[in-house]
Length: 438
Image (cartoon, rainbow, N blue to C red):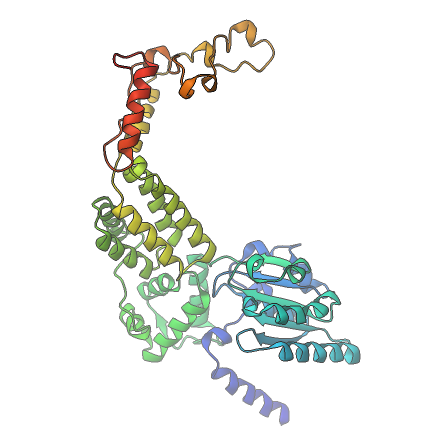
């Protein structure tokens, strides 16, 4: 009777847990995504299959399964699971957890998984308190962080632990998570029907965050048994962006985004950026478009534009969303307000056209590689003049094949910084080709 009562009580307790908690995988085989961490012979597999304690740092964006993996490790290895949040815990809590783990290990031989969520929030003293337990393997320590541990974790603790990097879930992964939650007895158990367009919307809104997707699904299921896009909109208190990433809206919004930056309308460009971000567009795709724009539509008119665009792309990879949208916005504003020039893309386009038409010509002998044996006998490198030996680093000699000597590819504008390059290139080109006035 007691066991039946306990079972009913446990079921009642679980029914009040959030959907994301109820759907937490019970084993590594149920974990969605992170395939690079879960294959045979990987550290996580070895930890589950071995009785030896190990220390890990799980670094990745929110909702990628850091807490889930810690639970799975504890459950699969029958270890005690102790969770500490670095937001609220102090040194006293850490030491108490470690002392209890040592007593348990000494009395019963049972090991403990000590999971510290948001470990980057621990200060040096709090992290130092973990060192004895990690060094002496009194616990299997797992620290979860959304920030680069090389900047936020003390070196002695990091050097004694394995660092595993988690990645944002792919769209197909999030789709599997949602579909499983709808039909699984631990989840909605088939009590709600998730319409295909609503599923697509939830996937977009999740942005690679499984926990967020389940939170939105649970909220929608509380409103209606038939979950449509409109129900999802009401559930997340957020207007759904009518945006199909495989259809016309995708191309229309991206096109408007690029053309707004090209037209120097920063406000319009930010609007389209926001539409893409809010619709769940991959931020890396947006960043790539900005990087391309920086050379294609700004180029030498503001050479720093490419630096800003690349920095924004790296920042998005580094911190992810939602904060990454700020870096994207900065790059968009810079690109929109920069002076414009398409001289770079026009130049490489013209050069490529000549090459494709077969206008190639012979490389001048004095420019050919003269380092390998026998090259000098072929006349390679003979007569080459080293520009650094001359005033201003310039010497008049042929560089282009003879057939292309008079071809002009780079035609700089007078916009922004390119005006300076236009003046300099005009003088250099005239000098190299012996043109009048050089």
